[in-house]
Structures are given as structure tokens and as C-alpha cells.
Length: 323
Ligand code: PMP
Image (cartoon, rainbow, N blue to C red; front, top):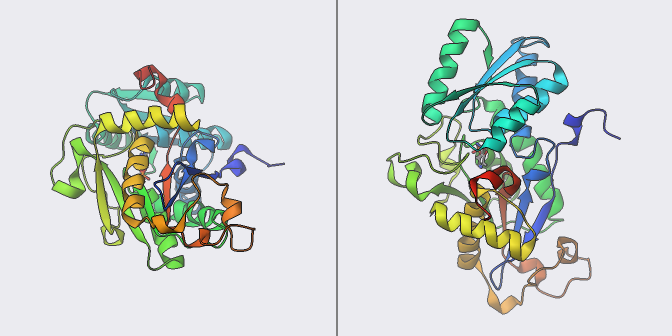
């Protein structure tokens, strides 16, 4: 039995359909209490602020977010008794607004994108003295993934080598924290970032329209360790959405846009690493792939690509993504 909903943070790593001669495993972050990867940094940032004496129960928090961080903070704020105002771009899905309200957060909608939301949150901090956790700069964001996401992955692969991590970039917390820890364990691996075709700042240096929810903020955040990256895959929104429908209908994996993008990018990376001569299993459970688990010869050598699916497709039903 867990003592608190916050102790229930943690997710499964699940093999998805993989190109011949490779294995793709996706970390299904929708299994977290608040339904996304952002539960991890949300709690970590609050705990860091508590340790530094900046925050104590009853205080007010304000945060600009595309939604999932806000929901993660709202879960922790409800469980730990904080007042919370979320500044949200008005382009973000209705589910996000309703969920934030359900957890008792106040919402301020801002016309525009994340840059506008950040500017408005700074104003509220100046006016009210509320504490901003600052997910785009706060080292606790990436550290949360270093401390929790990556160790969970290492445990789940049961001794197999990981060849690549493929993850979308918003704040950069997920890829920086997870990638840093995994590279310590598997020094030869590649860390591959995913960004939207319409807003590919890492690839082109030019911001564009903010079309993915949660991914591609239109700037390179301070938190993103670009030195860690071995490559960048660019994915168009329409392709990512088609992949979401495929994952749901063919695999029973219901995920959001950025997961669809991560999946397509992971397939490209897996294809580039694939060793068809090894006869890698199409869809075994990971336990059958451990060194002594009775697996067929060669399974352990199948190139293994780990990717992160940050949230659930349920969060996008109102957008018509699955219609
Ligand atoms: N996808 C979604 C749906 C998200 O909410 C986020 C977080 N903003 C990301 C991807 C990117 O994660 P990170 O901020 O850790 O880079």
C-alpha cells in the first residue's frame, strides 16, 4: 500500500511493434497518477523548493505550462496543500483545462503560445509574490528523470544493452535527465531528440508555429543539454497523428501527439540499427529477452531502442485525433 498518491509515480516499459531485426520499447508515462511524464518533475520541483525554504504548505504556486506539467503540479499541490494558478496557452486541449480545474487549480488562459504564457506568469509572480517553479530552467526537472525515469528503464530491460533513447523535447527535462543517466550505464548508446517539423529549432535554428501540445516550445531551453544529443529526428504533426491512430488500433496503445512523433522517430532509429539476420521477435514480452530467461539465441543482441510516450491519447479526444 502506498502512503500517498505521489508514491504511486512510476510506469511500465512495453515493447511495441518494431522493425525487423530490432526491438522498440516504449515507456508509457500515462500510467502516472496525473497521466503524464510531468508528474515526476512536478513533484521534484516542489520538493526542491520546500528543501530550499522557498515553499511551505499553504503558499501559492504559479506556473506557465502547456498542460501536463500543470496537471502534475496540480496533483502534488492538492496532495500537499498548495494554492495553484496555471497560465495556459488557449491552444491547449479542453481536457487539460478541465483536469486542472478538477484538481482545484485556477487557470489563466493566454492568447498565443508558451512564450506568451511564460511572460504572463512572470507578471503574476511580480504582482503577487507567488512562487514559480520554472520548469524550463529548474534543474530539479531533469534530475527527476535522472533519479526515477532512467533507473526504472534500466531495471525493466533486465540486463540488456540499450542502443538508443528517442524522446521529444519540450523543456528538455525528460531527454536530458533520462539520457544522462542511461549514457552512464550504456556509454555507446545514442540519444536522439524529436522535434516538430513546424517548429524545429534544434534542426533549423528557426522557431515556427507551435503545433504540438507539449513538444517543440519554439526555443532551446536552458535545461536541454544539447551536448548529450547524438541526433535529431523531425516529425510532421499529420504523420504523428496517423501513428497515434495506428498505435491505438493495431496495438491497443492509446497515446498523444508527441508519443506518435516519438514512435515514428524510434522506428527510423530502429531501422537504422536493425540486424535482420538475428531474427528478433516481433512482440515478445521483455522478460523472455533476458540473458537466462529461456530466450532464443540472439535475442539479447537485437538492437534495443527505448522511447518515451509522455501522455495518453485520452487527453486529446476532443481534438478529433482519433476520429
Ligand atoms: N510531450 C508532452 C505531451 C508533454 O507534455 C511534454 C512536456 N512539456 C513533452 C512531450 C516534452 O517533455 P520535456 O518537457 O521533458 O522535454
